Image 1 (cartoon, rainbow, N blue to C red):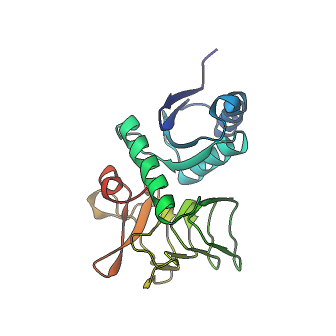
Image 2: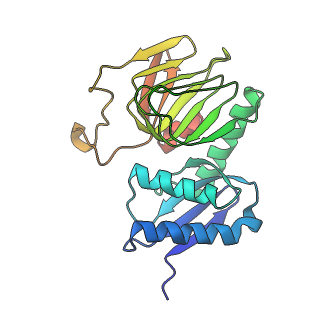
Image 3: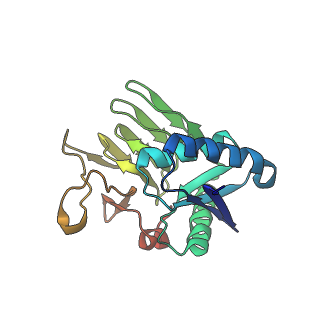
Length: 233
């Protein structure tokens, strides 16, 4: 029988090779089973992860991360693009994650769930949200904010006053961003479309994006190998 889910581990991360033809819900069940069986091996490790072998939407990537963490004690720190040099990029992503936590003098937090209209999440540390931040909701953090889903509401990072904080999301279409003392308010229904090849708007080929402060203003750009080199995530 064909092995539809293959997990390859590196010192700082995991690569999941996924069958491209299997129905996604069936694939999720097999991923859940794989990580339940492997839980004693991974325990409470914090790792980066990449998904190989099939095209995935942001929602599917988020559901995969949820499935892994719900069926193991793993903490997924970030999702790495499959075209990167896996072992090196895993190490850099994890090192940057821990460095940020040390700078903020905090262990950071994970939040599993979607923030819906009217809800607010506030923390005195950095936070990774495994879910969406919907329109009308908000998240505030003393450190950094990472959304493994869609950021459509408001986000405020860097409340501790330290420089160098950022906000990152798998899909970045926020109503309002604030990093430290710097604000960026977007126009409704015209909020940061991702420009695909040729400069055309692309809804189906969006990339994870990050916002950070540079030269006194908030900059937004896709997360790439180059952006990881100089900035966390």
